[in-house]
Image (cartoon, rainbow, N blue to C red; front, top):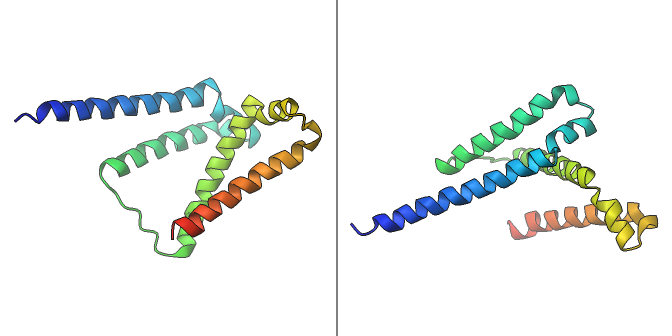
Amino acid sequence: MLDWPLHAFIVLLGLSGGLAVGSGLVALLTVLDIIPRLAQIAYAYSLSIWFETAVISGAVYWTFADFFDWKLSLAGITSQMAAGLLNGIFVGLLAAALTEVLNVFPILAKRIHLSDYLVGLVMAMVLGKTLGSLLDWLWYQW
């Protein structure tokens, strides 16, 4: 009988957390023009509605999957590799669009006096992220 304040607090906390995360995602996508810039980089600006639809559909699907505890059974190593590849492509393209919008690497290279080594800096970051992801996936996940 006295549990209703606790349950009301948990519901309020969950809604406020979801609102904060959702607002942050919308702010990231709209203020920084991530999707139009991603479409421009991919030379597919006329198909930008598909990028927007994919982001919205993915968010809605995975929200329902989380709420209703849906399980995605990927039994074979091939299907797991395909899912990982698609996930990596999405994250990589989103990160590329974000860094393109913010011009992070040229500013970073200029500030730490590595403008001549910009390609090496980018390759070090890419290889470090790839190695870290593989180490996490192959070592810590199994």
